[in-house]
Image (cartoon, rainbow, N blue to C red; front, side, top):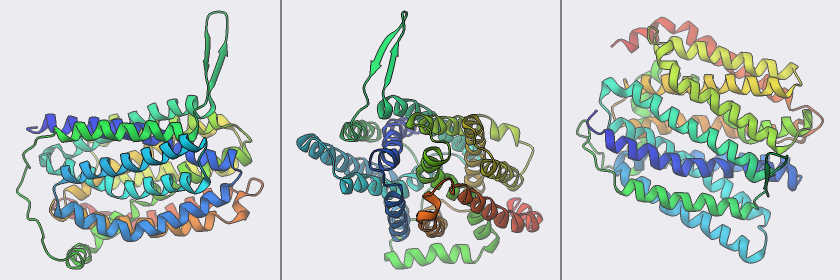
Length: 417
C-alpha cells in the first residue's frame, strides 16, 4: 500500500476527534432523559435534525466528489472546533447551558456525521488500491470502534463520576458539566486538524472531477443507480440495520434503560461499550470469517443476527442480556458496514461514490426521520412501551431481508462482473 502513512494519519485524526465526539453524543441524550426529564423533547429534536440532514446529505455528496477530500476534512474540523468551543465558552461564562444550545450541539454533530463519514470512506477509497479495499474498511472499522470503546469508558466516568473508597484504592472523579464535555470535544477537533494538515498522498487512480452545476451532479448520482436497480436495492436494504442501531444508540437505549430497566447512566455507557466491542470484533474478524463467502451472503447472515438481537430485547428485562445483545448488534452492524462498503467500492467508481452514497444516505435519513418521529410519540416513552420500537425494528429487517434472499443469485452474478 503506497499511501500507508497517509492512511494512518487519516485514521489517527478520525480517532482523536471521534473519541471526544462519542462522549458528547452519549452525554447529550442522557442529559435530556435524566437531568432535564425531556426524553420526548429530545426525540422530537432528533427527528427534526435528521429530516433536515436529508437535504444537507445530498449537497454534501456533491462536495465530496467536487473538492479534495483533505480540504473537506480540514474545513469540517475548523467549523466543528468553532461551534463546540463557542458553546462551551458561553456555558462557562453563564455557569450552565440552556437546552437549546445543548440541542444545537447535538444537531450540529448529526449534520457533521453526514459529511464526515462519506468523506472518510471516499478518501479511504481514493488512497487505497482495489485489492486492499476490504482490509482498509476493516481497519477503518477497528479504529473507529476502538475509539467508541474508549469514549464509552470515559463517558461512564465523565457523565456519572466515580467514587471508590477502598483500603487499597482511593479514587473519586466528579462528573463533568455538559460545557466541560463540549470543551474537550472542541479541543480534539483542533488536534485532528493538525494531523490532517500533514497528510500527503498520491491518488490510486486519476479522478474525473465533475464541474457541472450541483443539480446536474445530483442527477448523475441518481441516474447511475437508476441504471443499476439491483445495486440500488442492495445499497438501501443493507442500510436497514444501521437505521435502527443509530436510533437505538441515541434514543431507544436511554429510554429502555430509564423506563424499562430503571437503571442509571453508567448502564447506558456500558451498553455503548458492549456495542462498540462487538463492532471492534467485527472489524478484526468479519473479513476473515466470511473470506470464502460473498459480500451478499455475509450481509444476509449478519442481518439475521441483528434480527435475533432486537427480538430478544422485546421479551427480556435483564441488564446483562442488554449488554450481550448490544454486543451482537455491534458485530452485526459493523460487519454489514464492512461488507456493504467493500461491495459498493467494487461497483461504483471513486469519482461518483460521493453522489451515489448521498442517494443511499438521503433515503436512509428520510426513513430514519420517519421512525424517530414515530418513536417520539409519548406512547413509546410511557411505562415500558419502548419494547414496541424493537418490534418495529425487527419487522423492518425482515422486510429488507426477503428481497435480498429472492435476488441473491442475481446479486452474486452482479458481484462477479
